[in-house]
Image (cartoon, rainbow, N blue to C red; front, side, top):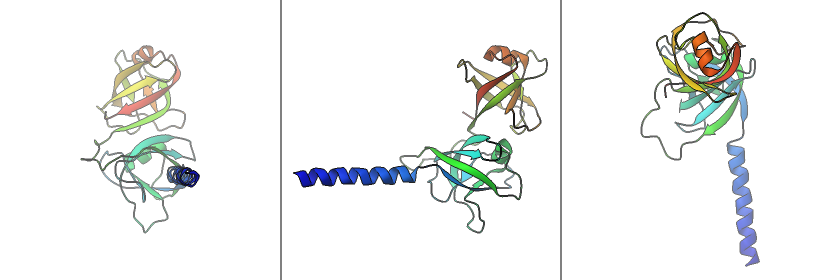
Length: 200
């Protein structure tokens, strides 16, 4: 009986170690893809289609959650490939390998029946109140104009839906600029930490 218990415990320890190693954060180089659509995705050599990964640009600490849609080209030194629009979000330039940290957020238990919805993503960072609009609007450097996004104030949990109506300059101190009306609804008077979700 003791042998059986010891064998089971040993097996549990080994499997736990394998699982932890399999999903530990990893560091590597990211390459920007030149796809021409507005999809947000990542290609990874090991994780299955549908895995959700958090990609953190180590040069500016900007981060984005992306869904694995395939495997990268083996002819490059990059560990992962990031779509063009996703690269805009976290500041990965064209033609340059960028060091990133990769964290596993969710692994599908079975193969997805269909591809994830185009453009579904989330991002966290600062929202800055700008302008004088009385509508719930926002400006963003890369989200398509006309798209609605959900913003949640990280401090108080308030959420609103705003419409992207203009382009803003890319900046490391903010992820989005919002109208005064949106700021009031969220409880933000100048700058506030938010979570941005799109394509839900």
